[in-house]
Length: 94
Image 1 (cartoon, rainbow, N blue to C red):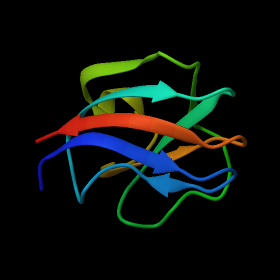
Image 2 (image 1 turned 45 degrees about the vertical axis):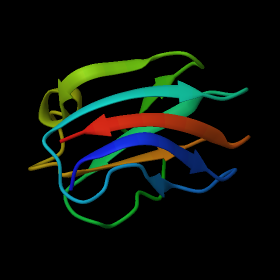
Image 3 (image 1 turned 90 degrees about the vertical axis):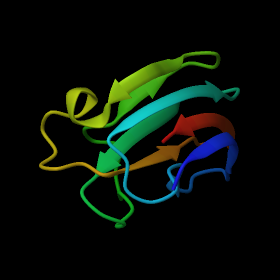
């Protein structure tokens, strides 16, 4: 399902920022602390930041294939965000 909008990420909670399975994503992070972005193969939330990408506020990606961002994940389909202080993530995908 397509999505365009902001997703609230509660403090210290892995939060899915995609609406179902996706192949490409655009996102920008807004927070007062680093935001970790991580992909999974399916709807199981990550439990650690190992393998996650770290973004500062105002940074993100534009129309990137999830598989190219996370080459170590076999068939990644979902994207999650984590921030110790909580965050907002602007997300767009088809």
